[in-house]
Amino acid sequence: MIRVRALRKHYQVHERPPGVAGALRSLFHRTYKAVAAVDGIDFDIAASERVGFLGPNGAGKTTTLKVLSGLLHPTSGEVSVDGHEPRRRDDAFLQKIMLVLGQKQQLLWDLPPSDTFELNRAVYGVPRDEYAATLRELTELLELGDLVRKPARTLSLGERMKCELAAALIHRPKVLFLDEPTIGLDVSMQATVRGFVERYNQRYGATILLTSHYMEDVQRLCPRVIVIDKGKLVYDGALEALVARIRPDKRVVLRFTRPVDRADLADLGTVVRHGAGDTVLDVHKDAVNRVVTQALARLPVADLTVENPPLEEVMSELFARGHAEPSP
Image (cartoon, rainbow, N blue to C red; front, side):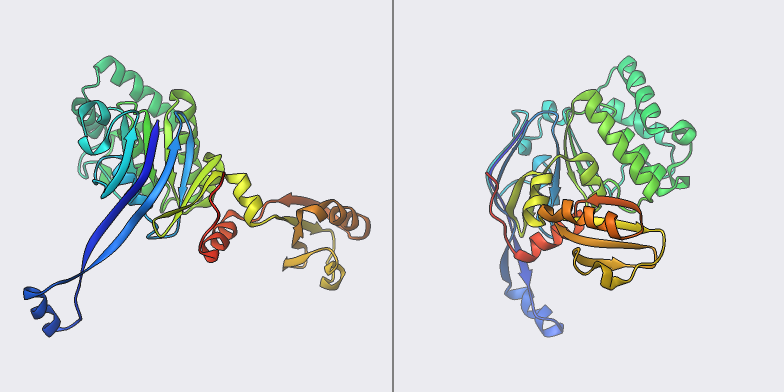
């Protein structure tokens, strides 16, 4: 569904020294610096896949999404989406895709979302019967209720995002580019948006490429991740395999019926956090069985869980290394 080969997007950025003198000199002579936002990345995404697109700020994620949606032209390389060249932005291509930016909105500020829905229906030429059926499904999946009849300016951020998603999907796109769709939302609304994206993918078989700094979004929605850093691809593969490669240890969370001295935990693993009633240990994956057995045998354990390290820590360590070997 999505094919990217040797994609590069470079910018020429004007640089000048501060101050009035520098500003005056720049009127007659400008110095430019080449900045590589995306620097030769390759990947393929199959139909109906949900893929996380990760990287630190400035890594080139949004630039790549804009190239894939046709808003930016690549400096070089080959890009195709369902057989279309995005930069041409032909009607057949635009009918199949949608780019949702969490920090941008398409709702008309003083009008109810229903008016934006109707506008998008007309823009995409959606037959009225199909539009009505789609709107009923989206209203049910997103629990929109009466929100669609209230002016957009009166809606909360979470309510507006739900309506933004509905407006973006009126024409049932086959490919969704989601750029930080849960940014700024509370925990409950983040879960609502994640659940909706998952159900939409399952119901319509849509291909989804998601960027997010909320790792819960990625863990819930994306079995596969593509990671870029400084415009270069550093990982493409299963999320579980990335976690296992970067952090082969496990987190053992122990909750006690009474306080336990920290010294009693020293031989079990690295203590990440120790409180009066609970402790978190870093334990190598090969030692988990031994640690669990010893903890249950000699400590007043009320509850015990074994987890992967937080994905935030895995990503931080990956970027701190500066590079990673490409996956097979």
